[in-house]
Image (cartoon, rainbow, N blue to C red; front, top):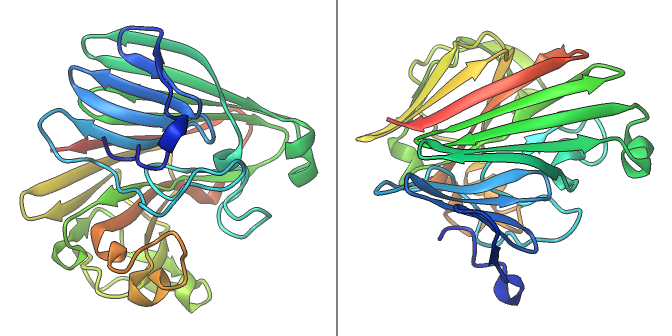
Length: 281
């Protein structure tokens, strides 16, 4: 299954429920509707493949698991800040070990609920009390909902790495027409291209997005439904950016596109949430 190559001899599984298998690093799920792999670190879904269909997410084959180091692929959670607003980049949620507090199984899928609370480590990075809960519903599609209760505002993004066969053949609709271009110092721009065809490095925060975004590549179609978001981030490093990333091989940029449900221009407040649903259609 996609994403298991870097476990090597650590892959020692024991089945404790019908569909969920516990591993030293996280969980595998083998359900009649899908197969999936989840890390405890970051409560990160790194692989999801509906039965009889292509994998939904991309993961870097060179990315290896190390405690406290982000894994490139699937859906890393950027929180309590996005980008380089603090250290580490994109926050500490994706490199912290979350606790699985609940799971439910049915013929329609599996629900897992993870929690993360403040600790001496998190307070050294972000001096606020908080509790965060991530609900993950896996079935015919993927749904994630982040619930945040914190003493201060925070920013967040589901940094979703979607898979494609050739980025040159991909088009994206539902982004809106206004964005901040990080490659131009965050300048505000207005899009004149719809749908978006990625033909160079792109790092944009769309600030007036629609409720649904669609990635289309011939018959390959992924629909992302956003809820309670303020922004959509689109990122691909292209050839020149890929060369600076040690966990990406030559040509990997042609196999992925990040489309991220986010709260950046309008930060999350106390008792707030961010929700995304991703489906092959």
